[in-house]
Structure formats: structure tokens, C-alpha cells
Length: 296
Image (cartoon, rainbow, N blue to C red; front, side, top):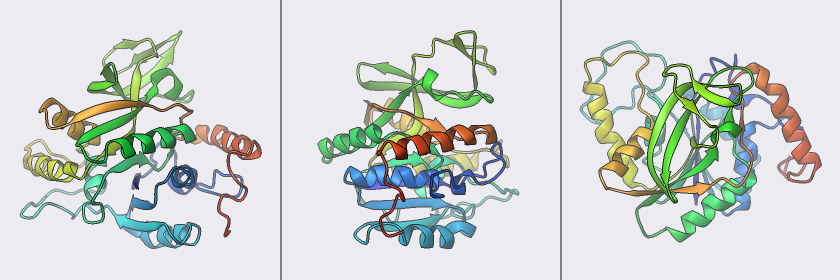
């Protein structure tokens, strides 16, 4: 089974590249705990998408730690990686978004795969539930979202963006991207729209289970995206939109798999202390070995 980690962000609100912050008790990156959880549940191929300048460092860092039987691909998400025949004439410094990050891996993935953010902690049960789903749906074109509860994914230090889900049973109906969610007086408010939420809604934390059929869809949508007259230096193409379009077109089914565990992220620099304390607590409780990798 394949795990794809997206680690090409700039960490603008965090103040530095949070993907490489030594949050673990022995200086481990947050992504290493996710990789460890995935390996415990049968994942055997790690694909990491990052910036070109970080490829060699991450390849060396992970290859020296992962068991020898684990396949590793570290790939650069590059602005110049466009579909054949497409061009972009404007100026741009940031990547094209999460859909483009996934598309970057099109040449190394040929089976079902899970997608996560490298700077999020998803909890051990989430990987177990994802792995069980992937084993049960190897032969069909059913995708899945590992869903979390909105109130459990907020930050005390500022607004967050979340994909608020509409769910029918265990079927995903739609994902509504909300960009400035904050908790106020027992409810959750989107500062952009004024929408209010109870906090019990299911949300996407970008833990998706996909099939290779997504690559053609991303390429087609990316072509349309690049043709848009309103395209600017900050426009991005997101995975939830790609999957939602496929869902609404009847091309796929998308199930919502319960996460079954904790989530935390490091959006702001002030989130760091809590993350360090959490990982230390989990390690001392025996959930993780110390050091995390036996060959360190």
C-alpha cells in the first residue's frame, strides 16, 4: 500500500518550514510519526512531495531511517511541471496546490494510495482504518475520506481552513471549503461567510484514499485551470475539488471512514509547544518507540 505525503508548503503562518521542525522527543519531524503509523498498518511504499531544494535532504534523511524493505520516492513539485502543450506566462513562486502535488506522483503510483499533509498528525487508528478500507476496496473505483470532527480540529491561536462535509450515512455528498473558521462562545463561525456550525460536523483534513484514475482527472482540470483568464500568482487547484467533481459526475463513490483518533496540526508557531508535549506524552506512554527508528 502506498502513502503519499504532501510537504511542499512554505509555512507562512508558522514562520518557517514546519515539515522539518524537530517536534519529536528525539528531534523527529512530525511526518515521521505518520510514516511510522502507516508502516505499522501495512503500508510499504512512501511517496513524499516537496520542494526541489529539499529533495536530496529528505531522501537522505528518510532513507537512513526507514526499514530496507520500504520503497521510498521523494519528488519535487515544480511550477514548470505542466501538462503537455500547456504554458504559463505569468510570474509565480508558490506551487499549484494540493491537486498538482498529487499529480506530481503520477509516474511512481500505479495502485490505490492514501494522501496526507506532512504537517498534520492524524492518529494511529486513522491509518488502521484507512488500511482496512484499502484492502476491502482494491478492485473497485471507490475513494474515501478519513473524516474528523470539526470542533476537534480548531486552533486556539487563530483561524483555520477546513473542508466541511455533507454526509449521507457513510457516503460523502459534498465538501464545502471554509477558509476562516474560529471557535466563539460554544460555536464555530466562518469569518468569511458568517456561516455558523455546531462543531460536530465531519471535516476533511486532507486524508484521502484515491485510485490512479485521479491522475487523468487532475490533468484535464489542470488544463482548464491554466486556460482561465483570471488565473493569478496565487490561484491553486485543490484535491477536494477534484474528488468532488468526480463524485458529482458519477465517476466515483466516496465513503467517509471514521478517523477513530486524535488529530493536531501546527498552523501557527504558537501551536508548537502543544505538539511537542503531545508527542512526548505519546512516546512516554509507549505508543511510539524512542528513538522512533530502530537504526538511529
